[in-house]
Image 1: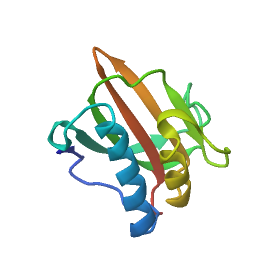
Image 2: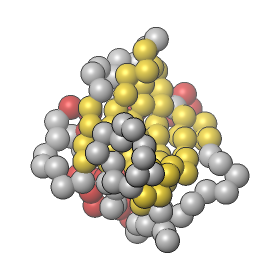
Image 3: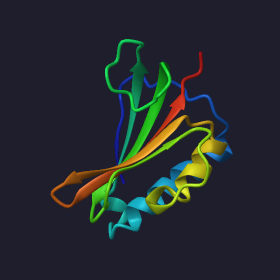
Length: 127
């Protein structure tokens, strides 16, 4: 798996086991699109959502560690999950419960076009 990350990565506010389960479920989504593990990309980013951000899709203001798994294949329509939301279907069916257990506040899938897509989860940063 290819890995992309900033030089100084923020620490996510989560426990190891639920975090790894969430990441595992995200990888399963990427593999389920017909990718081999070596063809997936894990991107980890520091994300700040500020009060004046125009379109946040309901993401609370704050600092987050965003994890994305990106790969080829058919990712279908974009999907969104927010913390506190009930059961989810589609590609996020297993990601959402794992994300909730890991303390994530938001997750989504995105069809990037040209036969590619991604699944992303945002976990609050440790203060």
